[in-house]
Length: 394
Ligand SMILES: Cc1ncc(COP(=O)(O)O)c(C=O)c1O
Image 1: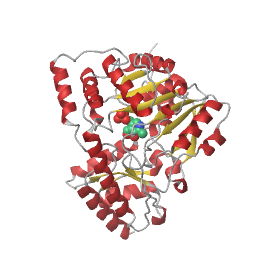
Image 2: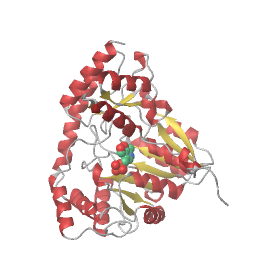
Image 3: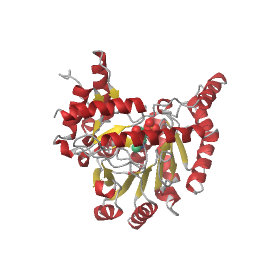
Image 4: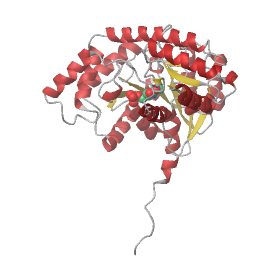
């Protein structure tokens, strides 16, 4: 029997979301094809090059034969380096053999961590706005995202009281992200502790995305793993992309509950086998080698942050809080009278300035735009001049 028509795409694909920054980037590239110069604030990626000593470690690794598969959870030496780094930074003992997995980026940690812990019908509490992949993957597995609005009056920090109100019998996982993308907010120690208490009280898994933990401007980073007793119910998602300007190396890791890590490893065998061997060797150098470049990059981000926040606050209809971590400014644009997507498109087409609308990160992002300031001061100055001129004409 011949079946007529075309084969169809799986229905689950309708539930998968995407990362709008890549779509805006593609739109900007189309504009650039006409010869126009676009100022880019859309991509969340360091503009710095990977530090030279890390690149050198990869070259050496390639020359000495790190061109094959590694163990599925990663080279043991890298897992040991991660365990040492996390133990020292977050004051918790980590078993490199059972509690660490190396992956091709932090994103696969989010994906496999959710797949390994959440059943269809479960509820997953998460901040909104937030990194869109959380909601996408939760929808993909037929679970229910439960958004907690991040309020500007609360400096865009997730409120434990708001979280507590949304816990039901169906809640399985709490997703956290501090320092936060897109708001640039950071959780305080007492907030992390209160969220840990909620997770313990209601027997929840916690996925703590701390990929920006080194990019912090005030005080220090407070990790969920540092809270006594939380390692057993936490999946820390972290990586090399942001701290060491290594987005293209595709290298990240997850640390936490041994049973979840074992199941994430099982998924990794199904998807990727392992992260690239020479990238892993570079990762060892990144963690164990000199850390000066990290401090230099953060100091530079801080200068850029101050410049962009100052400029944004001088634009008619814009107001911007000073972010405390990551490299995103999240100005309120409600007084322009435009919706955030409409304004994003207007700025891209009229001023050739690329940024991301707040609603790309969830419905509570309406009224805001995200500008990544991982770009030069010159670009920030020129970009803000253009935005100012375009908005004056509204
Ligand atoms: C909050 C957050 N988590 C995870 C990631 C993904 O990182 P990676 O490039 O290591 O997959 C990003 C990248 O933008 C991010 O902003």
